[in-house]
Length: 77
Image (cartoon, rainbow, N blue to C red; front, side, top):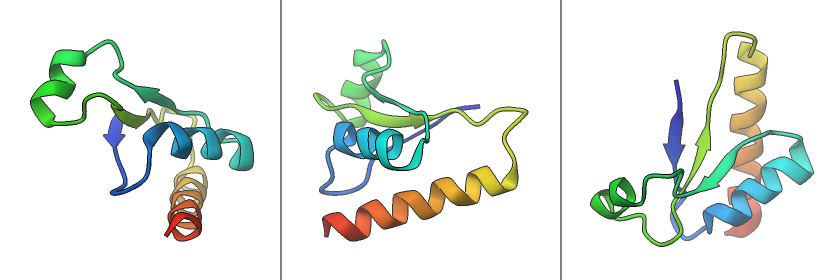
């Protein structure tokens, strides 16, 4: 499955960059080849951050990702 999200007042590109560079968390940002979908949900032109946890991800991976997002949001507010 995939999770697509934004954080209010935080550019998705910056969030994705920081997740990658500071925490080693892989994600994708942007329109994900679906600009019409983003138009309908109001996320144009920036798009969203997309995470795709898979079979080999652990609950620790999920917790580490949530902690990283919280830390970035805290830094940016």
